[in-house]
Image (cartoon, rainbow, N blue to C red; front, side):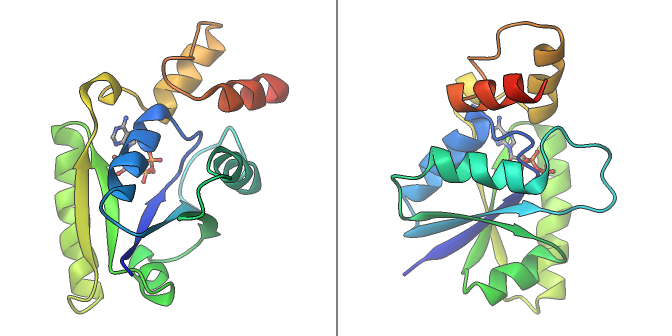
Length: 159
Ligand code: ADP
């Protein structure tokens, strides 16, 4: 049973994230999506519970995809949940530079127990980010290329 942890902010979950989940679910038996409570981060659009509920709803027919909120070190969350590794998505060199540092750090603080596997977004999803979605949404432009309809409805309810 190969279980992996997919940590992130997911504010909101985009088609880019979903593309990574889709690719990873073909390689691993179970994915735990961890909505990370990051104390340092600025304001959020959705609170943690709302983000978790949206993701749960999106994957309600997929028992191999689990969702939780988490705080602290991702390596600890991975180990506590018997995950064999962490998955992350790569879009650009900026992502790469960040992820290369993080994976090294995570390996070190977990005594080499937790490794990271990166997936590449398919090209139509490569430029999608949660912050872009929020900007386009606030400009009253169409975001249906970037997020699922469920997310659009939840964003409209919140506006
Ligand atoms: P974080 O705050 O950890 O960056 P995000 O929710 O923004 O959280 O992203 C979680 C992970 O998903 C990161 O590895 C990020 O690079 C990846 N990701 C986000 N958007 C995309 C996308 N469009 N394509 C591929 N990977 C993505």
